[in-house]
Image 1 (tube, rainbow, N blue to C red):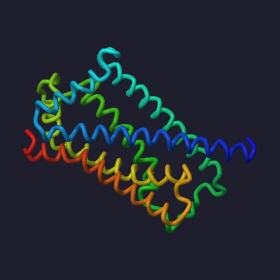
Image 2: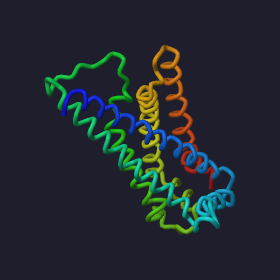
Image 3: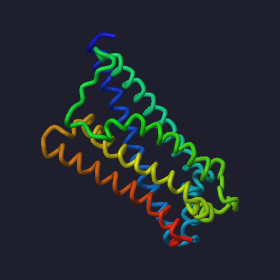
Image 4: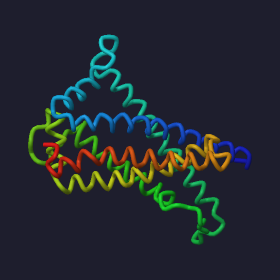
Length: 226
């Protein structure tokens, strides 16, 4: 591959990562809002869980729109991970000295964490789906047919809540750096003000989303949500 073609290919891969990243940001925002329904009690939360399965009826079958959203998320995940792997391999091959790396003073911890944090988040998503969606595993041994009870039983277990909160730390760092990278790729950091705005947006999204997700397990663990 020529230098020009490689550069165009790299830009295309980064664009795909930016677009799929935005898809995930929109999804976790909506998902986080839905989780906060737990503060309104079991009826409101269970109604929300049922509502997302019936959106689009009768034009779509039950859970039809939900499966369309899942399909978009799965495709986005595959594209996002594949692009990240290709870009990482190119970066490794481009190093002139394999074991010597120059570190920028402006680099952040979250930027170095992106690769391993992404793997950690991927593993967490697999467990999260097993816990609440695919397998519906109740680690307390209770029923799994009621969304609210499953949520409370799960987060009443301290080690499961700890895993969830650690995943939220990884999510916050991924969101902060990912928002900045997406803005940079999309040409939205061309001046000092734009760079500042992109950086602030990254922090706002990271704190709002990861913080919002963390509220429910913490309040369940301490008995406020029961």
